[in-house]
Every structure is written in structure tokens, then in C-alpha cells.
Length: 252
Image 1 (tube, rainbow, N blue to C red):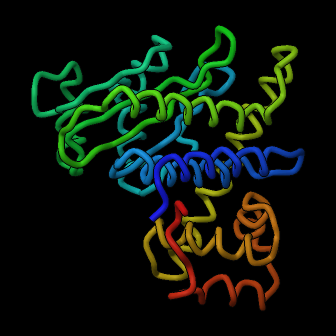
Image 2: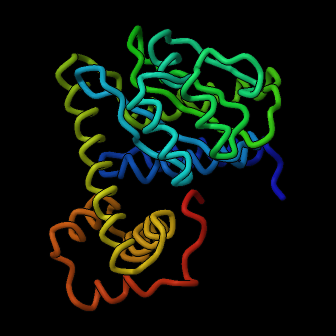
């Protein structure tokens, strides 16, 4: 098994390789969520991104459980991820079974099997774009090196959203953020379609979608849009819906 240092170096090399003009931001962030689980011993990971009005949206997660818990925070306007976004500071909470500042979120997280949660802001200049979040099974503290790695990964997510270019004006930043959010919406819709047609869970539906896009060297968002718009060819549709046993982990 690769050491954490090797895996971390590989993660940032992957980010550097994919940050080109024509990359799929949701695909890269989904991969990053999977690497957060591997690197930091988390049970799940998620990334929230703010729209131009400052409202948070789920951008990528490593599992459907994490996706639902991120949505719970947004809908209830309570949780560590929102606190990290509002304050611009990391929120590290080692045990949700102990005293918690989130009376609604903490029971929901524990019911989902998560007993500790940590959130790290995605910051550019003085603006917070979103958060990278870790959901842990057993309660345990993050050591200093874990905190440093998590914040570095949050910076990597920030660079991904900004396409590794400095934001020269607010108009370009707004366009970049909106484009990323639009991609996520298309992918969520496609997951639902594939889940229903293939009679599989949404995690597996996402794995099928990613596998098909990679096998055909197409952008994940483009394939998702074709699924939703029903513009995939008949043979492509058959291939997409018959991938059982051929796909790997969705976050790999």
C-alpha cells in the first residue's frame, strides 16, 4: 500500500494534470473527495460550493450518505460546514456525542453513522468559496498533520474551481462558480435517471456514469447532459446501463 506521502503527492500531481482549459470540475472534485477518505481515514467526504449569492450547494461527495448530510446542513442552516464557510476558519469537532453546538445536525450525523466531523474553508484572497468536509465514523481527534493535509486539500479544491488561474475580476469568478454549479446539477439529474433505469443506487449510478465517460474520453458533464436530454445513441445507452461488475469505487 502506498504511503500517505506518496498518495498525497499523487493527488496533487493529478490535480496539476487535470487543471487544463477543458477539464470537468465535478469529476476532479469527486476524485478529490475519494482521496480525502483515503488520506485522512475518513468515512466520507464532501465539498460545498457557494453560488454568486452566497448560498451553499453540494458540489461533490464520496457517498450518498455524505450527500444527504450536506443537504441536511444547507436546508437546516446549521452545521460545521456552514460555520467554516461563514467564519473562514477550520471547524474541527472530535466527538458529536459530547456537547455539540449543532442541536439538529449532531443527531442526524450520528444516526448516519458519523461521530466526528471536520470542515475546512476554501479560500481565495479574502473570499470563502466553499468548504471541504470530513465525516468520521468513530469519534477521534485530528492530529496537527491531519489538519495541515486537510487544509492543503481544501486549497487544491479551490484551485480546481478557479481553473488554476488567478481571479482578475468578480465577473470571471461569478461565471466560473456558476458553471461549476450547473455541471453538478446535470450530473445529479443523470444519476437519478440512471438509478431508475438501471435499478441501482445513486452511488453505483454515479460510478457507471464516470466509467462510461472515462472509457469514451468524454467530459462527465457532457455525458450527464446527454443522459438527461436523451441524446445518447441506442448502443451507448445500452452500454451505460449494463456496467455491473465493471466499475470501480466512485471516488477512486
